[in-house]
Length: 59
Image (cartoon, rainbow, N blue to C red; front, side):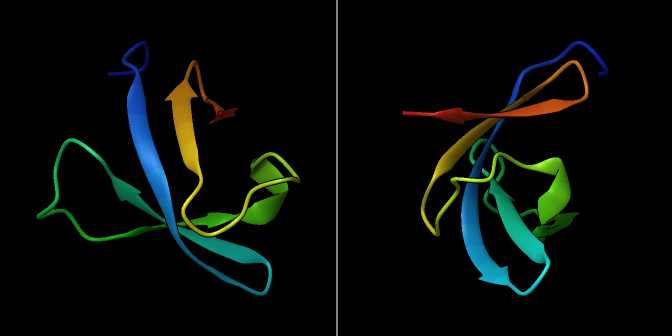
C-alpha cells in the first residue's frame, strides 16, 4: 500500500486541517490531514495524488 497511488478530493478546509475524500471509495469516511503536509495552494474541491508518502496537487 505504501507505493500505491491514491487520489483524493479536498472535501473541506477547517483551520489547520483539510478533510480529504478518496475518489475510488465513496463509502470511506473523510480523512483528516494537517494542512502543513499538503501543498499550500489547495482549495476545496482540489484533487490530490498521494504517492510515496507525499501529497501532490493535480491540475
